[in-house]
Image (tube, rainbow, N blue to C red; front, side, top):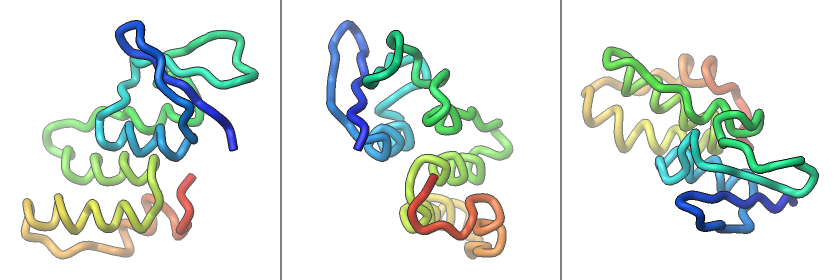
Length: 114
């Protein structure tokens, strides 16, 4: 397991797994501008510039915010967590039933996440 660290406001935190960082990004506890580092990297980089995390920071438009937010989170956390997030956040807000075919198409059938 890789040990990742992140820094904000001059304070370093960690170690974290990449899964932990993705979950933090999904909860907006880690931003694209926060610096991250792990052994083997030449320097600290903004999280949004690190390939393992870059997909976590796509900004949705106002019209697509609920759907994009779910798929953005799905890129960062396990599929089962994304379905749970959809059921707790989007479905109650929109009153729409979950389209599992669309969800599977957008995030794949993986149960372990990226």
